[in-house]
Amino acid sequence: GSQLTITEDDAYALQREVDGVQAAAPMLRGSGQVVFGNNNWSTQIYGVTPEYLEARQWELASGRAFDPSHVDGAAKVVLLGQTVARTLFGDSDPLGETLRIRRVPHTVIGVLDRKGQSMVGQDQDDVVLIPISTARKRVLGGNIAKSRNVNSISVKVKDGADITVAEQEIRDLLRQRHRLQPNQEDDFFLR
Image 1 (tube, rainbow, N blue to C red):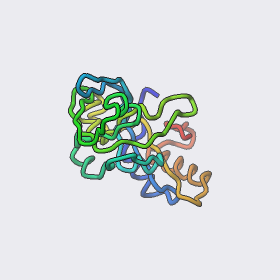
Image 2: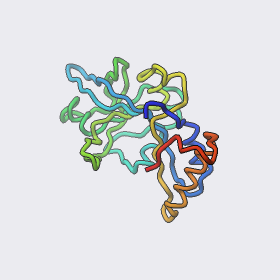
Image 3: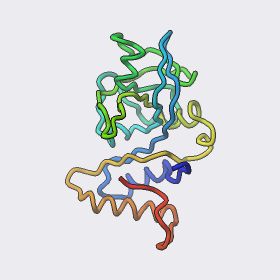
Image 4: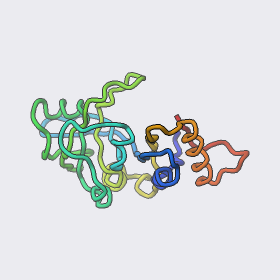
């Protein structure tokens, strides 16, 4: 909804405290112009942590992923979805190039593997990924810059773990962390 109720710390707690969780990745979402030379493209901007690719089971087509130092230092680095890479760079290799995301320069360190359309027809490759701290402090800003709240947390459950049990443990932990009473509805959605 319009009010963000889950936090980066919720994601870290899920990964640390729920046995069935292999990876939990907080994500901030925005949109904006991405510019390289004379080419520009309006796309989705996701601020993520290194766990995001694992949680979403998303491989790289080339380059390298974020590491913790990129998040710790709010590095100006970017991973490009296939649609953005093709639109801005054509057949040229974007690795090492500098583009601007909402007027902030970022160095391309990787290109994501093709993901295709989502079940609702959205082009999942029309996206750029930047470190969550960079999104918060340098790109998306506004009220987001002052909080630890996030739009969503992607969770990957361990192979062989019971998803129903993991889902209940996730719900229980979030309710506890959000200090919800038994008679109160969840202030988050699980899907």
